Length: 144
Image 1 (cartoon, helix red, strand yellow):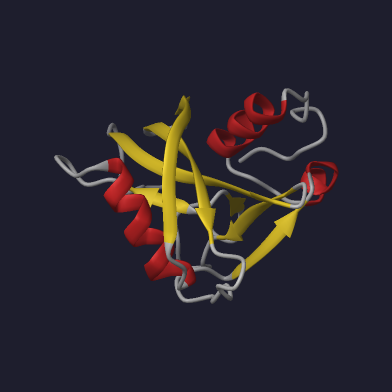
Image 2 (image 1 turned 90 degrees about the horizontal axis):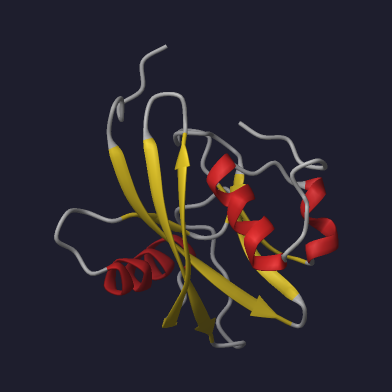
């Protein structure tokens, strides 16, 4: 099976958006790499681009929300079979009045940490969840 990212190191940014004890997660489109898996909202950063600017644009383009991008809370490097993802996680705020739209995602939900085992996440997001929540969720989640 061929992948368009063979041998590459891909820099991505994701948003950690919390509200009332839950985190915003989104479901990838069926046409995406790792289709229909759940993840923290974000995407690929083109070479030379600002991570914060890209994340702000992605949240607007995929969910229709204006985001305030805050501090970098962690960086996770995850090796998949044919490529490596270098993922930066930023704490973000979105206005509670902004209604989430499913523009560039299949679905979006607010999920409490206790519900994460009900969703299938890519490996890099799973590592992020484990670090963010200081939980051992690796045993209860499926990895792709």
